[in-house]
Image 1 (cartoon, rainbow, N blue to C red):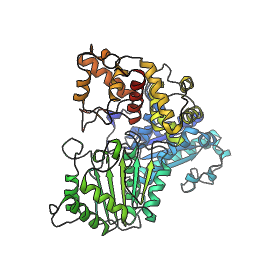
Image 2 (cartoon, one colour; image 1 turned 90 degrees about the vertical axis):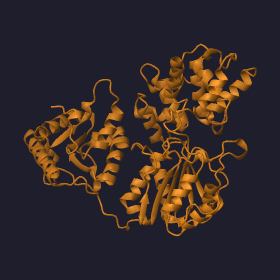
Image 3 (cartoon, rainbow, N blue to C red; image 1 turned 90 degrees about the horizontal axis):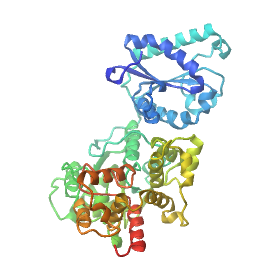
Image 4 (cartoon, one colour; image 1 turned 120 degrees about the horizontal axis):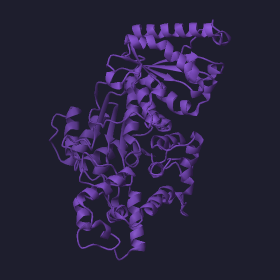
Length: 533
């Protein structure tokens, strides 16, 4: 009996069955034996055969792992050798177990070296050692084993409190925590173990005063920080006295910040300043830095780029005087840690670690292709990602480019021409931008991107409309003149779908944005090939 998502009650216990497709027969038996619990209404059972034809199987599996209270893992040689299980399902389940107390119930169904697998060492295997695999191979013992296993699951459902944290941290709780202003993000984080470890090391050792995570939008800066904060929360923030977060895209007005006045005022108040309105911006910044230094504080500043200069002569410099004094002061002296996420490297800072997130691990790059709907073996996805430098923008564009080709197969990546330029000059993303340029020709999508190349920062739509208004400029706006408002919206939607324009911002919907490399590419093309325009 298939239980529809709409029929699931919040109090139901969700069981996810993780298995190799080579062990389908065992999976079917397990499902059959669990059905009495399903009929009783105690559990909602899910395995990947529940995915409908035409559905995206990868996101469906990840979503179910995130919802499940229990994961039943059918352990065999096939299971332990599965690339997808090892790289996608097991890390997700381990994280859920550590963060939220998800229960892992491994069932040994075939001979394999499971005792050498690190994540299984601390988990009770079923059946117990008094039942041999030779016995399980007999039909009678197999059914008895499964019956006993279902009884154990029923006992777990009856006795376990799935809202109870998995462990009690040894650190004392911070005096104050407020991270409510940080953006909500998805829970999918791929291949960022190195960056999570770096943040752990910086916090534990105190070897850096500021860590800056730099990448274009959509790479996962905020998701990385939120995952790290979840990890810290499980340990009561590991010695932090205060934890405070602020996003410069979350000002309560629906707009991105144009000054740091609200941040400075509310943060001074939160750190118990007696008169947050007193003094000049420089005085306020210095005073806030002193208050933060008084206790070991974890400060998270998310989306700092609205506060940074976009001009070439002082690119990345913090414009707001109070915020600049605060950050500069913490860089010089800080008992805790300030974590910054931004699209632009922060200029004029010392004693800080700059982490470039534009380059992905091979696991993250492969997962990005898979999520983008690209088909092919795990090995072929890894090879394609490496051929494009595991560069976040290049891989993101590659996924959308291939998804527009029938079959969505990764083998089509080999036909995309390479460029004879250095990797440091953006060879891999420029290769993909050029591939889209070739696909679009000189039509409306290309002309929109050429207009973007006229600006050194995200332009307002009013500026774009001023450029494309009558009379037409040959090579720049002539194909845009005939577009209706609906068709103009379709062009922007297609460019956003291809990841060549940033998604429409709910904070600032009148602004068109794209990766700086995209602006640079089309500015250079326009300058060299169509100077009159």
